[in-house]
Length: 170
Length: 387
Image 1 (cartoon, rainbow over the protein chains, first blue to last red):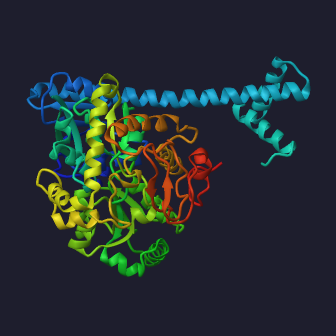
Image 2: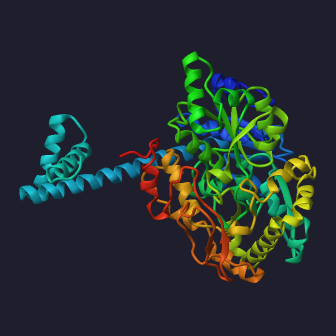
Image 3: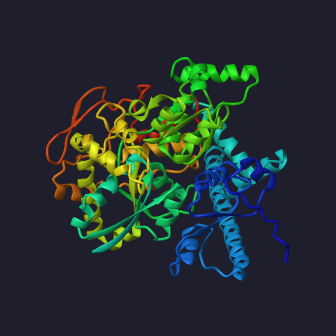
């Protein structure tokens, strides 16, 4: 186990936060700094930090419910010190999982968009050059290889140039 | 009695919840409501998400962002009614007011340019949350004078109650905050209010009642009872005869813990005054989430290809109309309207006769058609939605 490098602050200090770069921030539920912390997290998209909160009353199932609802973790009062580390680890791993899901989703969406672009460019070539599907795809692939650019970029160029040639606005 | 836990932040626009509790309007509907004061909007959102609260006083854009999963995982939230219009204000420190001369955005742009020329610190503004009308109003206003809010000024987030202190310490040069905290900045540190929400967009959205979608689905009758109690509370809060009593209620230590006179200042019936019920102030117009979504697109808070459908579906004029009929309140017949279309008094068709309305003009005279929100978002000189 790595030792934890822990810092305490009675209120949020942005300069210290930027310098310390914590893996995890634990904040009391009634802290007025929560909204500021969230806005900082949004401002630094590349470096989001999971926030763990302590709540002031203990209700069965609350922590699980909160985690399911998307807060990195809620921890209730009366917690045994021995459990803190495992809860923090659960919060972090869940947070990393959610981050990975977000990245995957964004990639899947962009993959889908580029596949549609390639399909449309292929259709255009088939119509304009009177060729079959395989040949149209081979033409795109050759263009991509010759220029060293992704096939989706070539397809997008082809579609926009075609638009211009047909009198559309660039 | 059905137990109900609701969250709120210490602001004048939490009035409808507080009145429903204190005037026995919840009890009249057999609801035993507990109101919980919170100091952060994120905690309000999370506690509704976790089922600790069934509903809450919320920033209209927060309810939308949470529903869309922007800034948090998606939260099942609906908006059966608005809690107020007007009340927020942009203000500047006495020093920045001197540098500006007048209170226009153009004067701010000149002051910013002079500071840059002298190599002085950038002008700092505080708003209450990234997803708030306060943020959109400040960004819109600054951008109207050619200031890029992400480059030419700095916008930080601070809780409403902390803004007075940060202004005093010189941490910030200006703010956009809800009542009564703008008035508190005026009274305690000589700040000058330069733009009221009632000037920026009279009748525009501000706070809403955000309700757990799962709870509302499970308890349709209780949902109606809650909305009825809140609509009656809004009618009571809006009556000028009750303004003094309302200010007294809100000033209590467990609610706003603020001076009664300060609260009363924004309960007047002029352009700055909060509206709770009159002019269809409590109706959940779907053109409101549409406008808010347009600003999310404009400032790059949502993916440029995202659509507004999910945001709009969270607003529930159907739930409002049913409750309004029971309360005897005239409800608008349409779900949406062109915003900023009228410059003067007009009559809005309602279920129980026309509803008197006044001007809803944006300060720059622009109109917003919810059916072309993308073009609107892309049409500003400063926007992140470019082709």
